[in-house]
Image (tube, rainbow, N blue to C red; front, side, top):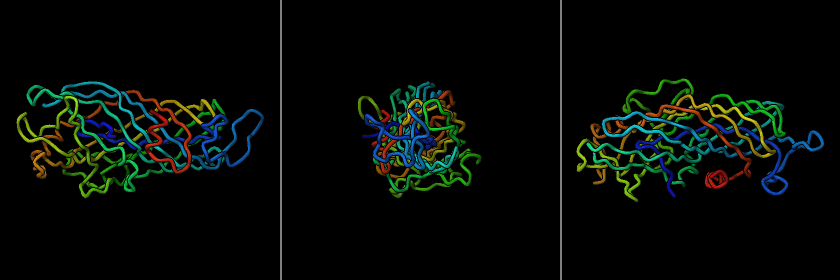
Length: 300
């Protein structure tokens, strides 16, 4: 399968928070099991380690551009995290596991059609997908316990010394890129949706002109989580998204030629620049070694 992105793509790498105790079966066992005993009758057992999947739903709006109509919709982001628990402290690492964003409607001046670049699902389990360090606190492992995770930032396709605080470049040409999906192109490669009335995004104002066969994307996201456990193996709450940046750093035209700088300028100028709204998250414990595909299946 393919997962949708924006017209120019936004991938968010968001932190996941830790959970304790046990299982997704009738007794809550995910296969890893708790590493220490319960703190009391009827309470959830504590853990020294845990693996979790996260689903974040973010409301966004976007302004019109020369070629794209304004709109609003939800973005959905998946992550998975490996976590360590020492007392009330949580540390570990998190990686992105996929995203779905709404399609965009282009203006009549560039054809008046729908566009939606897509990222293949299998890309998210690539070895080059970045992991970010996470830190936070929990008040316990039982239902009703609170979780507070510090802001974590991740650049995908972009090299940033400090993703949480670095300024996002104004121009795609100023982005220092990397190749997280390992295909030899800068940034993360998106493939346009061309089914059910969708078309490849135009590379200029002429709707009959060349279009993009592939888009090369760079993104940066910063998020913190604040929530409450609702079971021994799940939690939910608010996701505070403070940065959600992107650029198109290159592309390939449908004739197979690399996009010219002017074509990249056009498509980057018409990328979606999201205005961030409210966000929520839900989290579930998953077996150690679970794939991103398993995370998306568990949190559809």
